[in-house]
Amino acid sequence: MVENTALMQLTNVTKVFARGSVDEIKALDQVGLPIYNEDFITVIGSNGAGKTTLLNIIAGIFPPEKGGNITINGKDITNLSEHKRAKYIGRVYQDPHIGTAAKMTIEENLSLALLRGQSRGLSIATNRQRRQQFHSALAQLGLGLEDRLNTPVGTLSGGQRQALALMMATISKPALLLLDEHIATLDPNTARIVLELSELIIKREKMTTMMVTHNMEIALRYGNRLIMMHKGRIIVDLNQQQRSNLAVSDLVTAFERASGEQFADDSILLATPEG
Ligand SMILES: Nc1ncnc2c1ncn2[C@@H]1O[C@H](COP(=O)(O)OP(=O)(O)O)[C@@H](O)[C@H]1O
Ligand SMILES: [Mg+2]
Image 1 (tube, protein in one colour):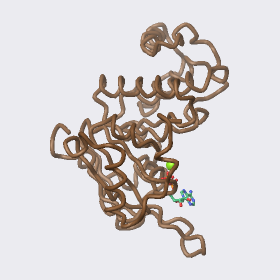
Image 2: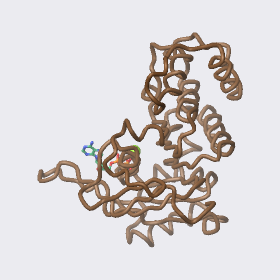
Image 3: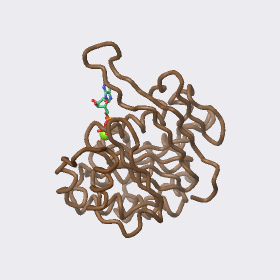
Image 4: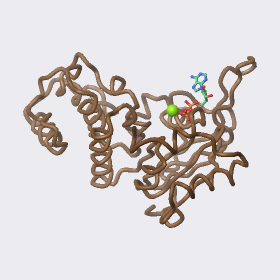
């Protein structure tokens, strides 16, 4: 947190799915959340807590219910389309297939990512300069992708593809980076590599970030702030100082105190480092 004015502010954000049906579900319930410049927020909560819905609302996939409000740098973007928000927001999903286009080459994928959110009229055709930029960016990943610019992305491993998705999400330096369990499908070793790459890029670019993880240890180890969601609400919001020296068991206690419920999600406790 660098200054007290929020980069992004969510106020009274509620999202109801299947309204009026027997399946009606309040995925977000009056969420208020300031996101400060250079915050690196880790987000935890059991399945269905509303984590992905929160990222979807921030990315503009759908608007909040009436009465909810989202601003970025003080500007109201509540009804700004996903497309128009793209220049502010980079995102990596759990599924490596979502962030990248399999039939296109690494270079074409990166070119598209670079153009996203920029003014129209720019050609998609790559030039030498751009290729140079991609080459050095990829070299930093340490995965050998810099020499495979013409390789179709579909032939890469899950980890390579997710590293590329990360690069694509950050290459145009968005104001906010959203990571939604982006290492959950990778084997533990690859997950660790992609996670460390994420932290490297986030720190180097001083990128404001929200990272959803189902691993409490990772949630405590990375970032400077931790929020816990439960039934569509943010029930715990810990800053750097409050978080330091906490162990996973303290988070469980915090959950039980804030929710008034017994902690029953063994999958979170038992998860290996992002397994
Ligand atoms: N597009 C949708 N249509 C209907 N229900 C949805 C949709 N997206 C999410 N939900 C429901 O909203 C709740 C929150 O989901 P989600 O935000 O995906 O949780 P999380 O990411 O924390 O696991 C869940 O009950 C889920 O089934
Ligand atoms: Mg989710």
